[in-house]
Amino acid sequence: MDTRPSGEPEGLALFPSCYNRRAMSVQTTPHKPRGRTSALRRDAAARKLRELFRRLRGAYGPQRWWPAETPFEVIVGAILTQAAAWTNVERAIGRLKAEGMLSPRAIREAPRDRLASVIRSAGYFNAKAAKLQAVCRHLGERYGDSLERLFDQDVAALRAELLGLYGVGEETADSIILYAAGKPSFVIDAYTRRILARVGVRPREESYAAHQALFMERLPPSAPLFNEYHALLVRHGKDACVKSRPRCAGCCLADICRHARRARSPGRT
Image (tube, rainbow, N blue to C red; front, side, top):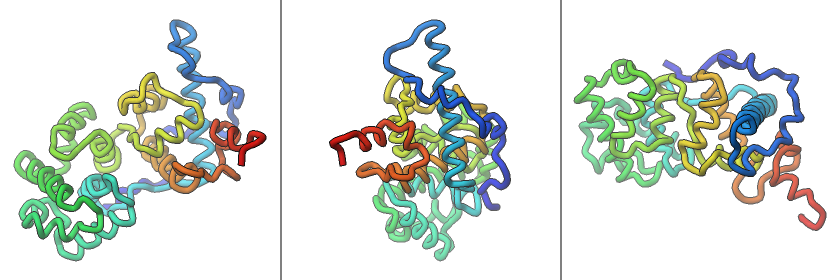
C-alpha cells in the first residue's frame, strides 16, 4: 500500500486562516513561568505553533510524506536516513527492491556484507546493515514478520519496544510510529529544532522530549496532522531555513523570525 496520506489532515479546522497575529510577538521562554503566567505562555506557544503550520501549509501545500509503498519500506527508510540525505536513501531502497531484498526475511537472512553492499549509498552501510537485521530478527522472532501485530499496541508501549531495539533512537522510533504505524507521535529532527529556535518557540530544555512535548501537549493528537506538520518543517528546513546562510528573502516566516530580523538590521549584509 501507499503510506502517503490523501486529503486534508484531520484537525486542520483548529488552524483557521484568520488568526490573531498579536500572539506572534509573545516571547514564550524568557524565564521559567509560574501559575497563570505559565498558562498564558503555554497558550501563546500553542497559538504560535498553529500559525507556523498555517503559514507553512500555505507556502508549500500538502507534502504527502512518507514516500513509500509499504509500512515496512518506511521502517527501512527510517533506519537508512540516519545521517544520510534522502536521495541516497532512495538509491539504497531502489537497490533493495531490485535485488528482491526489501522484506523482513530477505534482510534477516542476507549475509551481512551483501546487505551492506546493497545499501552502500545510504552511508554507514555496515552499521545500518546490522541495525536493519536486528530489527528484522525481532520482527520475525516475536511477531512472525507481522507489522499489524507489532503495531497493535498503544503509542507508549510501541515506542518503548522500538527504543529497546539495536540502532533505533528516538527520532527513528517516532518516524516508525507516525509514518509506518499511523499513530500520533511527533518526530523531532534538526530541521524542527532550528526553525523553532529561530521563530522563538523554545522548550523548557534542549532535550528531544522537551521539544516533542511542545507539539504533543499543544496540538490535537492526530497522526495525519503530525505527519503533515513534520513534513512541512522538513521541507522548509531544506528549502529556506538552512543551517548556514538561510534564504530569508521571501520566507513565509520572515516577519516572525529572529534570524531574519537580525539579517535585516542596519549594518548587516
